[in-house]
Amino acid sequence: MADQNKKKALYSSAVACLGFICFAVGAAAVGLPTWGYFNNSQAGPGSESGYFGPWQLCKYLLYGRERCGPSVTRFKPVLAVWLAGLVAVIAVAILGVFCVLSVFQLAMVMSRERVVMSYSVAVIAKLALVLLASKYSFCYVLFF
Image 1 (cartoon, rainbow, N blue to C red):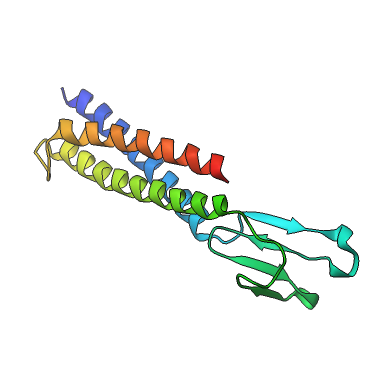
Image 2: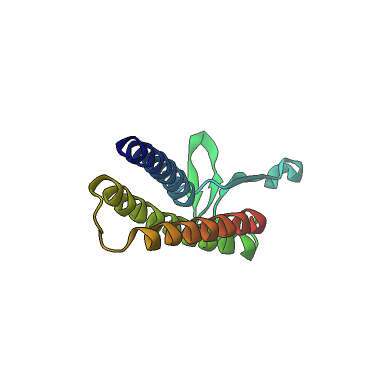
């Protein structure tokens, strides 16, 4: 029986670590302003280049400088980019709840006692959350 609990604890730890890695990568992706680059080098003297994300638009200037803001360039990202950022925030928040439930589940496996909720409710909630986060992640990739 103890060997089975060790396997369950190892499996729960691996799932929790994978969840935390996904949360960290997702949060970094949502927080970074560089989701894409633009460059219209064929425009002659009016050429512009820069980068954009759902929350920020920046234009490269001379000598390694940049200027950021909504009206610094003629390039305007479509509304779908902002919507992709919003859906990405929701997906990362769902992954955060998944990580909290992973800690609860790991505590229940180690102590064999109920922590905040029953074990089966925690496992089912984690499954539902990871499916929902996957759906939202797929949606924001499509939007972007």
